[in-house]
View 1: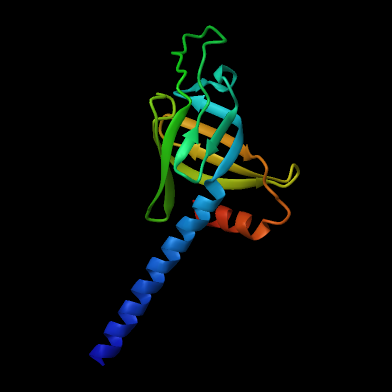
View 2: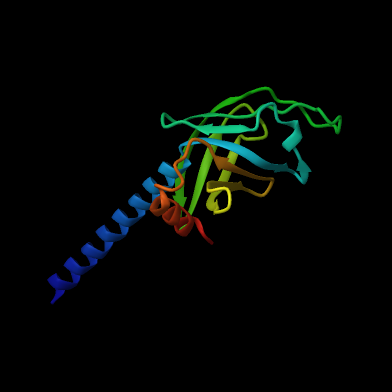
Length: 160
């Protein structure tokens, strides 16, 4: 009887680990790519119009391309021209986080990752948030119609 309990426990543990790894792989697959930013707020300041480019791009080699920040609106925003960094996806309990490392002060942080879709525009959307920042983007160069299963999984695995 004890052997059966041990085997059952091991099978459950392996199943849990495999399921967690596969979820992380799916989230990473969704994360990699270029997003056209549609919203960017930092410390209760709308920085959308302060970006040098409204693109964030997560490359599969762990690098990330970021928008620079300029003070176009003369609202006292501290400018930051660094547009490169690295990223790593991690999972904590049932939440996924992307850790961005950059000299760009506006992006050098950890962000909770969630996905959604805009059915009207047929786009995959990403939302990255933490206690200081919220940004949202729509994935560029993404075949929405042929990736419905992926989209459903991304939304399901990142829904709170």
